[in-house]
Image (cartoon, rainbow, N blue to C red):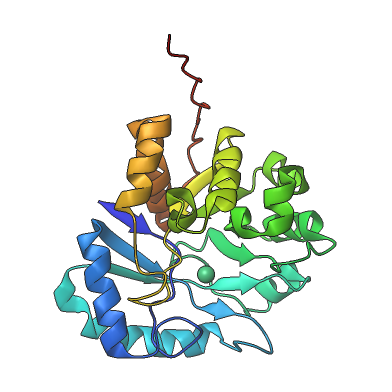
Length: 252
Ligand SMILES: [Fe+2]
């Protein structure tokens, strides 16, 4: 059973699901996708989604109680938008880590331009005792075009989270190619759905797992979708995920 550590299924707090009914529909879809644990990660983005850990918890707890009958294990995190000063914001309680173990923090970067100071910001965050997890690098055009942009992060040991839709090719061949490239460099530790609604960007795992298992083997798929996401929730170190580029076959 899979653990989904990035999705927007807490209703009414960001650009994810808006209603309890849509949230419930997504949770049922997640269960059908063989997901047993879900970490909801509402955006914390000052000026756009001004959520606070306390405000999110006040929405999360009754939601979790209402969803109890589904038999899913539900956790609260957040997805932090990088605006600099990560460590200061973390220290002042602006962010919610990935679950109660609070070892990892999910951070997304601006879509179109890589900001200055990301590596330094991540380094300072780690000095405060929390490990950044980079959200969906394959979807930033500057990374897809030139993966070396995030090499300093990877070589510093930052974990990368890719989106299942990207890996499955549902965001197009370019993004899928970038996803494979990052995996084959050994920089990726976890896949997650980043689901937002039951219609567009719905919860999905099985298709991505099939793609990874066919290309890199079942052990890689298990580490990306079972072992490492569980380790994030448990606050444990992540396992490396070796992904060997498939050999070209020549037919006579
Ligand atoms: Fe997200």
